[in-house]
Amino acid sequence: MRTETAKNELMTVMTTADLLKHWQGHRGLTRRVIEAFPEKELFNYCIGGMRPFGEMVMELLAIAAPGLREIVTGEQEKYDHDLGISSKSELLRQWDETTEIIEQYFPKIRLEQYHQSIKSFGRFESTVIENIFYFIDNEIHHRGRGYVYLRSLDIEPPFFWEH
Image 1: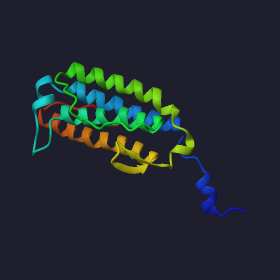
Image 2 (image 1 turned 180 degrees about the vertical axis):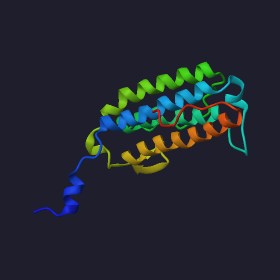
Image 3 (image 1 turned 90 degrees about the vertical axis):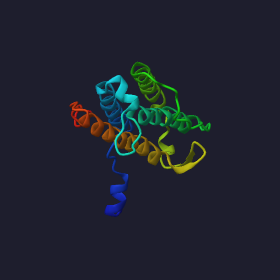
């Protein structure tokens, strides 16, 4: 007879498809935040020593697709957030390409991989699921900063619950 704890450990709370949908929902919302920025302020506006939002988005781009490819292929990716993007249209194009890469690679993660330890970009050791949560959490964190910037520019950001 199983204990209550053992039963709970076997219970599925979220499928991998649910997790992908959740992440892509956040990505869609972040895309709308990018769209809300005026071109100049996207790359030049900052408050309190924070980086411009465009730079934060390039960091997100440098992590999501390369990190996911690394999880799936096992080949170490290089982390480089200096993508040299200087226009909103290019940033959005790159965002959309990354979204497609996520759709392509995410389903290739085998279930047994999720709790395996990896060293992302050769530097950050944690499990695959912790890496994925980091990708999502980091995006939410930076998007929150984007909201602050938009509000300070008197621009109404997208509703955060619409993701």
